[in-house]
Image 1 (cartoon, each protein chain N blue to C red):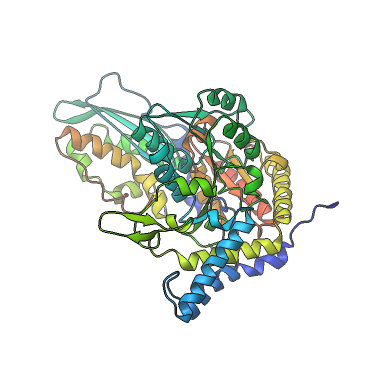
Image 2: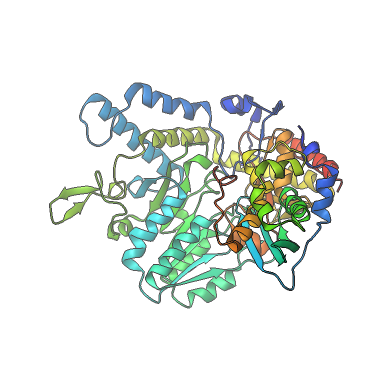
Length: 412
Length: 140
């Protein structure tokens, strides 16, 4: 590719019905995409179509609707797996990234983590990649170590090398920070962690929506992501695992679907990935996630990445023109996904979010479920603007105008 | 109501120059709470004088303008009042004190954090327990 191809936002925006909505009489400027993205008509229609045409349980019923639902569900798994460069046989549908890390905590951790073992995570993580390991460490009397950050907001890999001398059982790391946008070199981290004998878990919740992801190239043992952050429905996500590892693990929840045979005194387990999908699965939202993946595939993830790089570059050129604007993280579009965390003068992020909301501008304020990282930044909270395929430079201009208004109101 | 009305001069003044901010050397009541949504934090200390009077009251905290201004203004109101007065303070009183801003459910919690901490401390001192039904019903 000689010239970086990008997206035609004008053609994309009409696909998202919610963008027509007014907030306080203003055009909705939705910049809270790292929390959840809006949904295109294609995803909404896929849910409507399932419920109005072929709603049925999967893997059980032999009637026409049952066959169609099963086909749609498994086809969705195939497309989602292909989208992230992994095998469908190793792709477990879960509620989201949080359920994925908790699945690993129970199904892998209970069996393989022993007293005195070391688990490693980082200071850059979302709580969903910290708390499950804290609970696991406590239960197993194991030790949880944190990899710190360098001043610029990237991981201090020297600390990882040091931690690996303890031969940790697990290294859990985020592909991309939900606060700083930092993209970690997870392929390198996983290679050295696996060489040291660790199992690797990558939180891809903020990476999969924003850039091409190839799990097989990363070489991790587990990779997790959430559907609702990538144009899909809430309540659905995926855990991709190495098949042999998934086979060695114990089940997560017991119930229907996950079994092969049940006797009064014991049971045997269904094949992977069904072994980890107990009960009636989230059929509709899995189909919706498949539709989201089709939508993103049609746009092309290289183009999505280039589009967001362009937005980030524009944001970095314009927002610092507002006096008192302070930004956190690497701020380099080449090593950051479309997230801008910032503070403005002495205005608390919550007050700022209230004022911006009045202008129709939706941002996130607070600690972003990443308290250790926000504490490391040395601030009580940050404001965060995060981008998606339907955002344009106009949205960043609206944010900038909102920041200026906030400064006028606060007389700062 | 616009945000320009919420963030009136007086609110900004209490945010930037909080009255009764600091710690007491001697105190009889101390209470602390946080609002995980914003990361607001608040500590209130009270020295109780004769006749169950609030002799001295100070607070420390960090957070948004609404939570910090509200706490500061409340400490001014509470000074020299009887402890029983604290029991009577209502959500409406606090909103009136702030100039009746139009706040959504999440921001109401910021406004009421000071009252919650004050009541928690005073109720505890009086040997009962404050059940917070004002700001904790909606999700965080």
